[in-house]
Image (cartoon, rainbow over all chains, first blue to last red):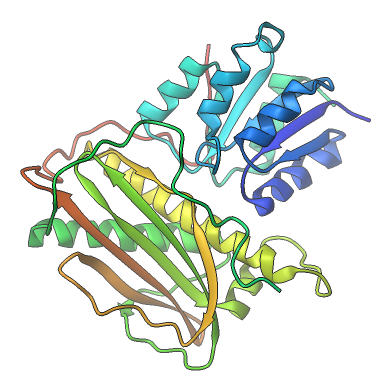
Length: 124
Length: 206
């Protein structure tokens, strides 16, 4: 199996769209439906190379999830890419301060997403 | 078959604290007109990218008798503006717009509900993008999606900024946007606010 990418988004459709972009390139795509599920998946370990994360989600938002997971030293080098409809400078600054590594405003271009994943996680 | 999307949820519990603010106040006519233009532009930008090739709007009232319609709602609030956005479309139209292969034998309606919520999310994201450029910041709820027949909405109020029907073939996508401002605040007077990040582009942090 290829490198593991965790997609955290409350839209199952978006998670599937990301999967259809990354899986053919050899990545193994894991899914979580909100920040709590995402943080849980990361806490369980499993060699996740990259997290792709929405911002506005129920239970726990994406930026808050990033802030929580980045408090643990073992996640310090875990790359996080925000994928969201939001694009305000204030939100982007909050994500950067929380420890995110990049930001894409939806809708995403599949080739751009794949190139960004390769840059942050390496080839599958 | 549950008729309500599993994504139904309360307004986000996390994120910036939302402070109690003053009573809502009706927007001035010029503000309503400018906001309506922002909403219509957002609809015409977002919906075609989501598989709904809308034509220019007519005023709402385009009844779709007997049609099962999916309706997605989102609320928003901020320092100077708060309100709701709702988008409704026939179930079959939304099904045709779904971007992935649907399993006819499976729970395809839930997938379509999910997509309707995502469209509402993208629509409000685009509106937020335009508002940021006017130095107006809003925080959105998560979407709520329902299915029903002969959907009607209460008659327009002073807070109705946009109640329009956008033709898609022989059907319509209906969009409602209601907003009020906060007492003593002035909207849309700063056309030179910060720019939002453009759609699809990548920002990588140091």
